Length: 305
Image 1 (cartoon, helix red, strand yellow):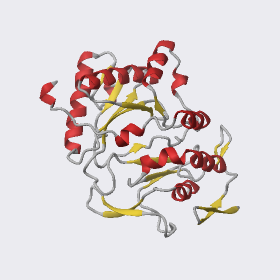
Image 2 (cartoon, helix red, strand yellow):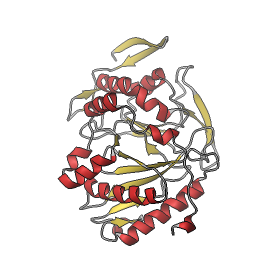
Image 3 (cartoon, one colour):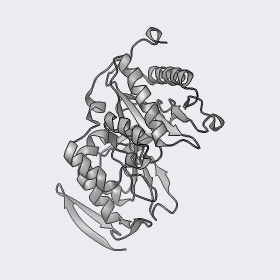
Image 4 (cartoon, helix red, strand yellow):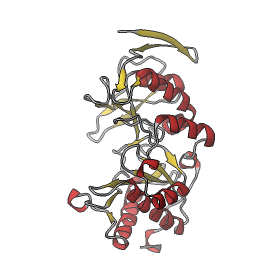
């Protein structure tokens, strides 16, 4: 096993198998992955900060087996920050907190191509910072249909004086986030609210949208997955790579991009690759910053439904 010793912020890291091709159909090695996350660190770290990280590891590349790792590995360096969190079965586990560049590079050296985080911080796991609508296209639907639904959601939420932000999933769908960042917010409230919104959109656009989980209802429609608003669920972190044929990224978009893309009818324009992600972020900054800083309050449902 080839190794290279590097120092980051005074920390000594041993990096292994840098030439290993983890995206074989594309030619993207572990060294390329580490360089991507190094360049994107200032954008992704605020969204990882103090959140219980779930690693999705591909030790032999995206075409081979993967596994999820919620527990922070016992062989972690002493300087990697951790937190204790309670699982559904009441067992307490130790999770990694990736709050700095050296920790980010360490988890990426484990071939953690995808980084998944909950909607709440590790110190307040029952208090979501945001509400999410996970837009998933069924058979015979695609990301352009998701863009149509995202725009409908944006307008509906705006009518309720709620700002929203959109990012690609890095795969087939889109994620619409509503920042809240208030201590009194509960998952019970965000799940109830998001389900009501999804159902009203389904009622008004029955040929385009379903709010029902059963796959039988999803053909040629977009499923608005409101159930992600749950303390036990995670979402792919913004700016994380996704495992697939190409190294695509879960990346924030401007709303005008969705308007333009639905008009042009080109789904490829909403698939952001690693190189485009770096150039866009370095040019425009963090378009998702509002999700972690903007404070909003959910209105009473009765006012609108």
